[in-house]
Length: 146
Image (cartoon, rainbow, N blue to C red):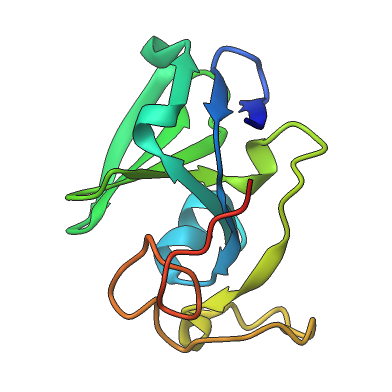
């Protein structure tokens, strides 16, 4: 079973994920842009497969009715999106150690993208999210890779 690792900029928070992860989706919604400083690219894992070391340095901030975001309270690195009523935890792709073995598969909330950039990679785009379920891929069904 594949094990991936990652963490924040200062090293206060490290995590390990054992098992499959969803491919990366780029979210262009205003909340993600405000949180990250640009659009946010994230994968997901089953929460029980994620071990977080330094959890005391993670601050959680509720940004919507759907869930809360976790970031390092020391360096400010965005790390997680914890969805209510889901067994999955979104992992900010930029916090993963390389090589992650994951690939970007598309873009969501493109109707809210910033006016300073274009999406020109040819990947699928959705003006809104993933049919109201942030734990699915762009086709509407969970797609996980080993």
